[in-house]
Image (cartoon, rainbow, N blue to C red; front, side, top):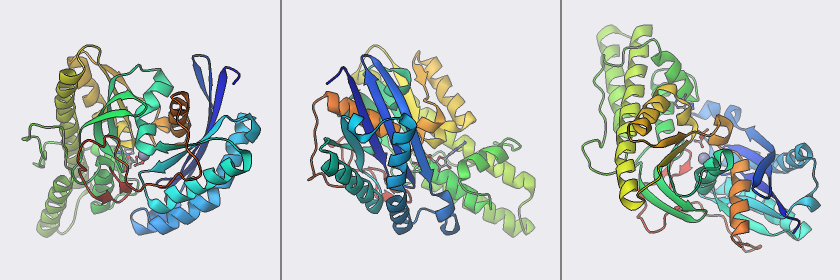
Length: 364
Ligand code: KG4
Ligand code: ZN
């Protein structure tokens, strides 16, 4: 080796086909390229990701994304040290497409293969973007994931809690659908909420009475549906203000739940890892200004450093997979052509599974 390590990463576990090249030279880690082909348009008519359509689109786009990632990085396959690929958890057809593509590249070049856990990719991103040192507390909040993790190493995670039903982004998307707003629902609900009165509707804060770090969002969605139906029954429809107030109330409830559970998770974290406190967030929901501000306030109250990677690296991408691959490669991991795709792959295998698969795949 030349003192530098260059990894190609592939990601195809949900509805983004992505390839990226990440290079480490000494202490310096650089993203040489990061290409993402989204599929929103392909699924929009169905109100959610259709696994077969996603898998087909990944198969069509993977080669192209690899080609573009190499071109943008201005390198060739022969300049790589290894190929990292999301091997789970996620929608099995998409994960398989990525794993098969990576195996083909590995067989053709002789480069080692590294199977990466998608959630580990998210969880290690603050190290890529901000050089955060182990250990730290991670909150994943996206359309498919919601969990609190203590991150101690590239394969050392303790799950403190997570959603027992919907992920928060999934709840935002469903809320938007109930109110006739466009997808993805999060940004649409946030925009409406700006004009709304969060106190007008009494919506529940699920599981806040439980002294643990688990969360639930499906009851909140049902309460929103009831409030909407009551208004429709009383007045024959929703006014603009009704919609804004419902959005504000919903967003406030999610913010209350996430911030209260973060407080609880920080207490649990300190019980296990006394001393330095860094909290990192990842996932599309972390883009919500109200939610982000509430999480920042909790961190400021408790003296924790708050790290939020730039949005393009918070949401699904392959740079995070290449980076996780880099850490695994450094730790001596090597996979081979027996690598298999895993629809379920909890980061913390010692804790029981919390939920079944969601709209955007297994939340593990
Ligand atoms: O991390 P992400 O891009 O994809 C995966 O789920 O893997 O997250 C997308 C989710 C969607 O459900 C979207 O509605 C939500 O993040 N989201 C938001 C906001 N922007 C995106 N939720 C609330 N507020 C936002 N501003
Ligand atoms: Zn993800």
